[in-house]
Amino acid sequence: MKNIETLIELQKIDSRIFKINEEIKNKPREISALESSFSARSASLKAAEDEFKHAQLEHKSLELELQSKEQAADKQKSQLGQVKSNKEYSALQLEIGKMKADNSLLEEKIIELLEKMDGLKQKVASEKEKFLLEEKKFKEEKNEIEIALKSLREQSDSLRVQRKVIVDAGIKPEVLALYERILENRGELAIVPVRDDACSGCYLSMRPQVVNELRLGKLLTCENCSRILYVENNE
Image 1 (cartoon, rainbow, N blue to C red):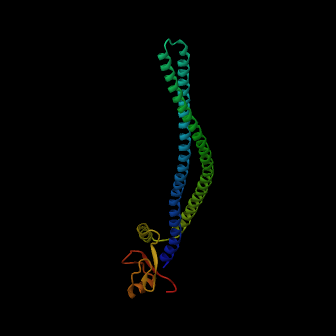
Image 2: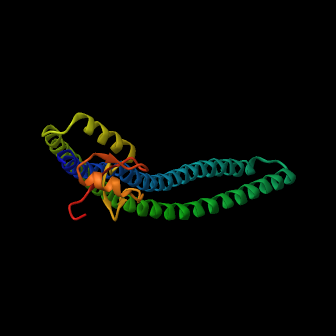
Image 3: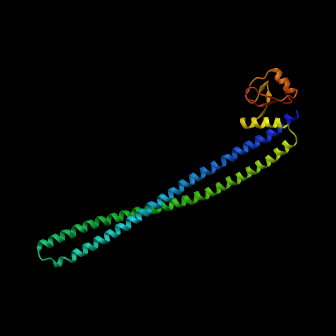
């Protein structure tokens, strides 16, 4: 019976270790989810900044284009006094008029772009504000998870020390080997009680002879799930 009692105590420890390890496994996933959300917010800010920078470059390009065309128009105007015929004068005036019209369209385009840039500037400011709030939240939540993870690891280490004490207190090596092999294959539970003449691990009904042998302290495993069986005192 001592082996069974020791295994029951051992499983209490192992069950807690199992649950803690499952929590430990989930923590990196939680951090990854936070990083993914924060990365999306960062990408949104960058997209807004890139759009604003692109508009700035376009504005600069249009300004240079307008400046160049205005200089060309001024040059054409300066040539009006040098023409010698009405035909040349009319042609030059027509060309100057066309250049003025083009420049007027270009000016309208620049004004529209400036209005767009005002909107983009506000968008960048809004996205930056959201980013800073998200960054603060991200750092706080990540720190909380890391603290929780450290605590879980400390608990796991402490339980492993307790486990070693139980093992060192005395348990047959072959019994321990059987228990650990089942634990590895079955996960959280390697030893389960018989309740209402059935294995509480897989609910397979037990023959009366098996139940009697268990009451006498014999070490038996379930024919179906291979878990170690025992009968509780109140059974």
